Image (tube, rainbow, N blue to C red; front, side, top):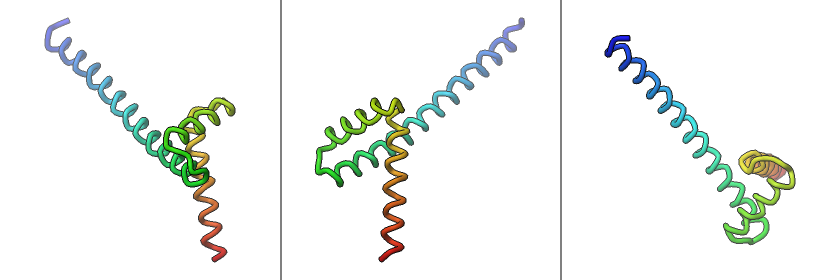
Length: 90
């Protein structure tokens, strides 16, 4: 294999790896945002601290055998649905 071709192949591999890492970081940031929203919901419902809210969310995650982000998305979706219903009835 000649050197320019080897460099091109290596650059393609590095670029693919960087794209994968970028995708993972974007997903993590999105998950973090929804987790923070779910913690906020728990805080507003129970008056707990942020740490206690996270611990509650983690406990639900373990009990339901789901990832925290999945539990958080479900909690936020339920809260949004309830808020929309309240808005319609007022």
